[in-house]
Image (cartoon, rainbow over all chains, first blue to last red; front, side, top):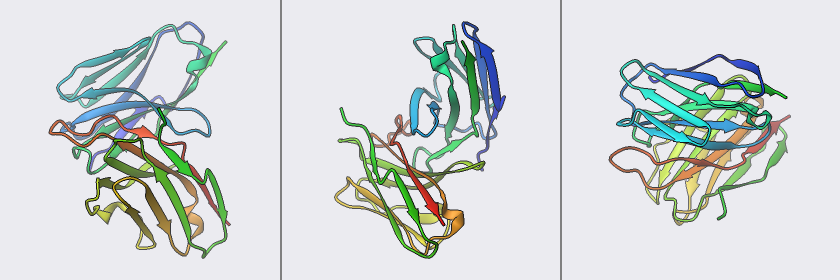
Length: 113
Length: 117
């Protein structure tokens, strides 16, 4: 059974810093990995999806990497802003979609103005 | 374009009552998912629909839970004889049809917050 772990559980940094959020998964046979953000009381917003054949994806100030063999993914946020404050979730697709996504418990990020 | 919509946004019900939660996926998305987010438990996958195909119900927490999808579009999640442990946020997501490379990006609705008193 796939298990996804995110470290750290919480992170607080000053505005402008670059930061890295970590995600690890126990079963490397994944189809893809997806990163989301969740704002308080809201649903999930998709940030990036990395297919199993890819090593990284970039969107604006966000860069996500995937190393299937080691069961790790990282989300890099450049030049952090207060608006980046949210909970960041990573999720692994292990069953080709029919088994849904397996989520980590998230990293609660606070960017201090 | 319109995203995934869910209704109601909030539902408070008494223990033992039945509730129905509705999800309207993005137009053209044939794959639909239900998840549950409980405090301290993270997000838990419940059930998946591909078009009108019969779903695999093995992920549902108990036989009090059922789900259907009519016409390959709108889906309802029904919880019978609600219990306090059913209190959670129920999230729906949709995506394009699955392919050989797995699922496409999933887009989530705002969720329904269910409180069982």
